[in-house]
Image (cartoon, rainbow, N blue to C red; front, side, top):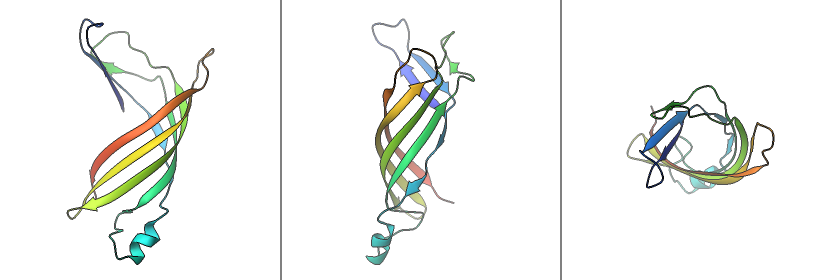
Length: 125
């Protein structure tokens, strides 16, 4: 689910929206062998990587506290650099930085710049 929030002096109330998003992100861990050779932790793919995130945002439904919110269907391709590291026993963190292109699947829309910036904390079972 993609999330959005808005508010401030231009809006009568603070709003939020959640919409579904589908993505496939193959990753190439380019320094995992170097980390392993230096006896660094590589458990659960703890390494740097390059990826190509292919995403699709459909106009299926929106969960929001404001009526009438719609999503423009969009497809995107975002080359991304990432870093994944483990801490404690089974916890990890991951940072992603990328900049790509996207196209809204309605007429009269041109290509758009789409950023990918995320920080995640996870648990590996």
